[in-house]
Image (cartoon, rainbow, N blue to C red; front, side, top):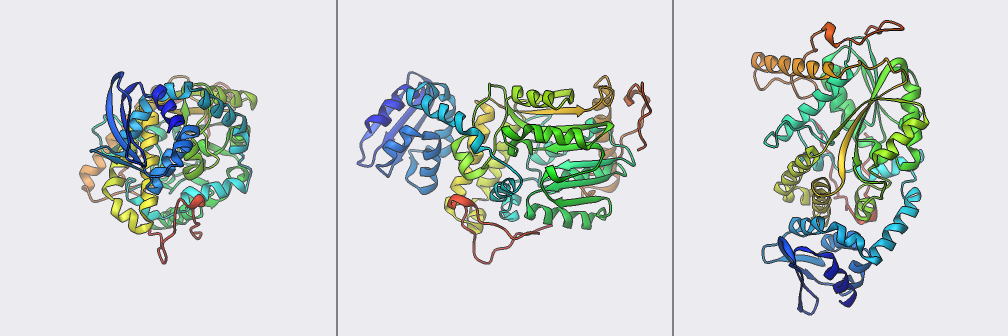
Length: 470
């Protein structure tokens, strides 16, 4: 315990950690400043060394394996909350500085995502049971940050807000061609199709998600103009009026950003523009948590804005608009965590208790990364031509309010049970001269794969289980 005690004495400044070792001896750390009090017990002597050298990885693994438990009313959330408010002192420890410098040197290898390897990494997280995701996501299976007008809104309301906010920025018109890079379970593509008579090509690496997407498009009667393809975003060709990507850049890898922005440049028509939504950080470039990298998002990374803009500059793209969301993902992840915890027994039936502890650790760590860490969401509008995007942002607010007004009106007429293909009532935004851009050069145009076993023994696939669908 000597090494671990040395680390914890300098690490915990706010709050108190009561740590009980394998022999039952109790140690107390912290207490210099106000904060939560947490009691934890270690059941394996190897953790004395493992937690000293790599606490971010081995604390999660020990909790998964049951060799780190919590007592006297403490929980995993309390433990990680204590960790999150003492993050800076941990990073200042000499051993941790060396570890982090090593991670930075290896991050190009850790985020190596060429075609083929990227599909393997995506399968580890997304080709698992659809039933699991339905336990904690909204009905539309939105697995990206929601947009809360108030923390009191439900996750369903906030995800509808998010889709509306995105589509208000896009200014969709009948006849447009839209590409979506990384389409999840298809909710945004179907919502776009409900707003305008657009043709959408949406790509994704996950066979399980594409299966669900295609089924939803068939059920909605839009499969003739909403095409879901299982392919790498780098393999898509053609020219589009809009190119959209939500929650995919986190899986691209820092050495592949020029490929992503290069695709925006190549796929966009001269007068078109793109939309990018991703997790980022307000701090300088860093690395991915070793626990998340190993068990949740292999090859993943949330970039600093300096890394994002450096790449867009290299490929000569206009960043026509930038928006940053700070607390929205805190509320989103809190809702997901609470729903998952309420459905713990169902999740354990699909997989097992170890998987549930892994997923709980992931959701908590992610939530606290947005609450106390440097994580945030950024949204960009990208264009080849400086005139492609309206010169003022008023059109976004105007269209967003009009869509909400039309949706509210539709719900009153149709009743609460009736929904559109995207799971929410929607209508085309009114055409207004104020929303049109100033045109200088030319007028605006008219407009089921088998589930794979998760690596590192994070998921043990139940025998005979099948992913359900709507």
